[in-house]
Image 1: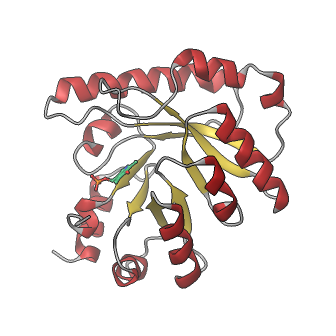
Image 2 (image 1 turned 45 degrees about the horizontal axis):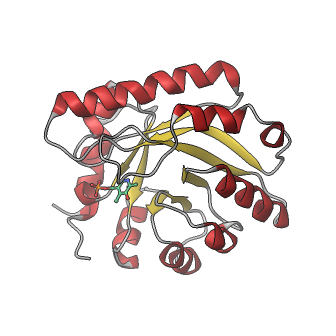
Amino acid sequence: MSISENLKKIKSSIAQHVTLVAVSKTKPNQDLLEAYKAGQRVFGENKVQEMTRKWGELPKDIEWHMIGHLQRNKVKYIAEYVSLVHGVDSFRLLKEINKQAAKYNRIIPCLLQMHIAEEDTKFGLDIKELDEIIDSEEFKSMKNIKIHGLMGMATFTDNENQIRKEFKSLKNIFDDLKPRLKDIDTLSMGMSSDYKIAIEEGSTMVRIGSSIFGSRNY
Ligand SMILES: *Cc1c(COP(=O)(O)O)cnc(C)c1O
């Protein structure tokens, strides 16, 4: 199937309130343009350099989401244009995003990445670290970032119960966060292999790559 057919099929299988982020990392501009022509406007990348190049080369009404691990020294390259940073996993990173956003007079929307998987290889905050950030005076005074919600990745496994359990735990943290911060509206969870489970468990944003663009050759 073509990229546009894949997109159409996925679109029709997810509820309208769920935002589809087309994860285009490693893919050539031509593939992104095919998705663009089929109406897709939200793209996710995990490398700063690649995303910035594509931002320069592709239509200006594309929303670029940084979904990967973001290093503090690279925030400056995306601060001008990034639409959403999914993987904020430390207070230091959030402070740097706030600082760089100020230079462009912007408010950069962010998601805090929570560690929900069993593997210790996945990045993310635990609940204590989350509380430390949002209860701090410094956080409350930050003018150039806005936390819209949470992002998480489930364990890479065939065990559906395990994945479901992890998504449920993220949804619970998300629900607890809602009364504590305004503007909480986004729960980013689910990729090609598990987005259906994620939506059943309350995801509002899915990040799908290979089911749209085909498998990646690194
Ligand atoms: C690559 C990636 C995805 C998409 O993965 P697929 O399995 O190709 O859908 C989603 N989220 C993150 C953080 C990624 O790095």
